[in-house]
Image (tube, helix red, strand yellow):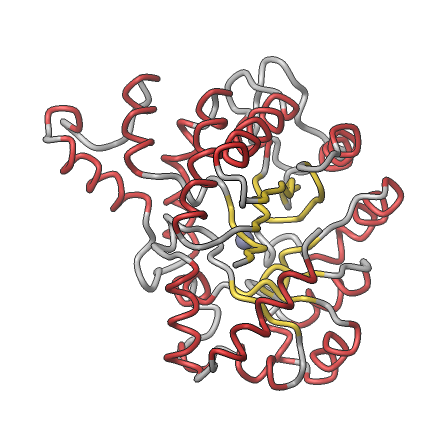
Length: 333
Ligand SMILES: [Zn+2]
């Protein structure tokens, strides 16, 4: 199987967080964690890292990333979780995947974005060496709003200022190879509209960097329109394009691939009723929809579960699932 959309920091094993937090002396917010039997401690961490089936708000969801991010401020930790994600994908039957992450989120202590990207690259290369059938690559995420709120403070890198995402693209262009392949834009879509980032993607195009854009998840069809205007060939989520039928038809015509993540959309209440999710309607309109996990740990999911959900709730046949897999395969960077 092929998976296009999986975030590293949302897919960390709770058992690994346990070991890393203990070794790094990171505060987990769970009293007496290391006095509990290890299994109970890992269960408690797992609960903190997995969003409820339906979140009250986006904060509920984002809170689940706090713990894994707190232990991912060291190179060896990033390398390890990248390698383990490769192993978990193999166990899930995935042989080709593009793993994404925002390096700036790993730079709150002393890492630079370059350290973070290189560490992740080492991890996925190890996973591929150990599993010869596995092909992994990396998508580097720019963060919406980063240019305004320098939440990242590293003593070795200046990660603030209006140009921060542009500089990240320059870095990716420098590091680009058979693993570091493409870029993305993630973060608070409703607060920082996609339109604002058109110059960023013009810069990506100038640098020859392929890209995808998170759009049409927390914001509506106009966000998808902006992603199309940016010249994207893929969109993360994109499902709210259903609000504009003509635009949905345009996606089909332009063969733009949507990286859909059903369980994640259910958790963040993208549609008020699950059965209103438009994946079936979009597929029937000829839009290239694909199935993805988004965040294996935060969403408590894997590809098998996503496929099972698509079949049970939206009546996709085995042949249609295979079709979506072909779309994913063709969309790989
Ligand atoms: Zn995502």
